[in-house]
Image (cartoon, rainbow, N blue to C red; front, side):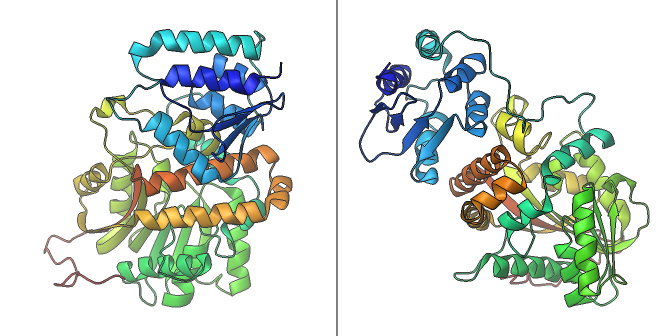
Length: 429
């Protein structure tokens, strides 16, 4: 077979009803498609069998993680083309997911069957988390999900995140490095919380300790950080000891639901609430409210999705759920604000920083690509491929306004009504 690329191109164009704006290079060495376009490399016909047995995103993801498909050229350009081709076509355009195109889907499946050969489905790559039992967001299940994502080796995260070891959206100015932007984000949060010497700060989902260290070192806060990741906790404790801050910071391997030693003057939750889940979000808000003193502040830094016309139809992304953030769920920012207020908080500021996350993710992808051999050795080739795809695709999702990220500043306003906030809104800058 010396024409696999042409046959794949023909199948795709028949399915979509439009010319394919991608070039295809197949396992037999053949190529087809417009010269100069991003090239989808199909290294093995096994990738087609994955699509036959699991059509759609999960089949493609498995082929990507296994190295059976790849992109030759600019990954962002290729993902942009794919997004516009498949996921973001207008309602008046023909699309492969519309029920009216079932005959085309059947014809495409027959074509893939001939090319891929009718063999049993290949086993999923080992990086996939498949066996999950029991209700969502129990303590046991949450701990397993967090371990899958974060306990993949601190060395790997050092290569991706850089010296700041902050795994959330940075806060950029026109120039500056990733480390500068992450420091500015941590300082922005401390200023919004109005931390001062001796304040008790609870950092929920403390990661590798960067927020705790910044708040203690720069503002004199007494910090308690909680995480479910033992690897993160061990790393954070070493950093804290190296900084000479063990008298100011305590790191616990603990579920936020089990924290009982309030009241705190302030709480930071940075990139953690995405793991909570909608079935537990009110419980999360109630717990944080109960842990604050009257007049205390919460800074909730959280990714948000666009609301669906029918919220009941919302489904978690299969690639993200199986390979990246198991059981993670995104909520629209309006629902988050409403839930915090239902718990008793007064929301005083919502700061949208969507474009900042796109730039942060591109910086992480750059770090990963520069250190690719070391990253692949530190975790696995498959794991490195997962991170490269999810971070690049996420960067484009932020750029296209498919998802956003917001810092919500809320106050446990006392019965007197004195929130402690200034009369004029602050210029956070």
